[in-house]
Image 1 (cartoon, rainbow, N blue to C red):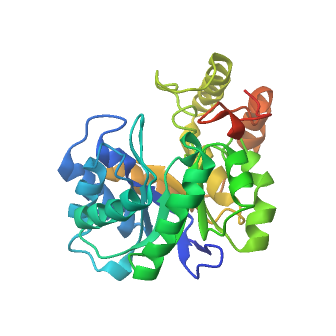
Image 2: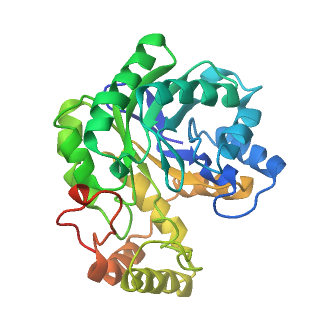
Image 3: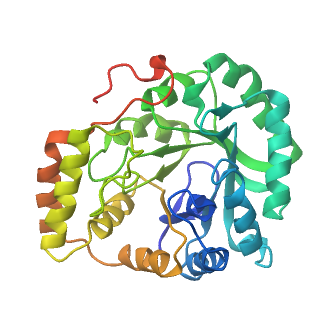
Length: 314
């Protein structure tokens, strides 16, 4: 496993990291013992960063993860959790709720601090609430030593662009914007790099778009985007390759992307993903797949408030 610097945090993160959302049964019903083995398999494969949130499985993911890491030396892994989003339509970014949220998360995770702390899916609430309530709470938690570094997570890149003008986060977590079908995250990199802001990239499979099974019913992508991604997956299968392999290799290959989160509750799957990043990418297949995906390149979907979704390709 290779490691890269996460902005100016001083942290070395594995290029492939473990997203614990699957432990909350958000994609399928999961077995707790298998989920715990998946966490251990990730660490054994050299993955040193794990991300979770109280939103995933309505605290189930944090609870299961806490059991998995309870007996593991704390200096063996980096850990992040989030606050502000607690249900599909449940958001609370008030100062006091952020403070109580981290205490609840730390108790479930059986630790007294997290390395990274994200304000979760902030595009759904007005910016003044984030700036006047949530950010001061995050800074207070940093002073208290309950978190080492803080930042934002969300989908619209315009959200980051606007809030970075007014704040100084240590890290940002972006998803579905650096993958085979969407590399629009590259536009944000110059500012992040200039300011030393760490970047966590998530969902190299675009939340299931890049899958032979096709995107789940709830996926917000357009029918055209789903169809073209499915065609690319079928093309890879006909060439004897799982598009997931190509996608994971593509997202982790860029030296400017410190780490990419993948989520699974299957120990064999995470071990397989870790092996993939050590194997050479099939450059010919990559060229062909990118060509197939050209008609939907950088096409995304609306998430959150209108002011964060201006001029996007949908």
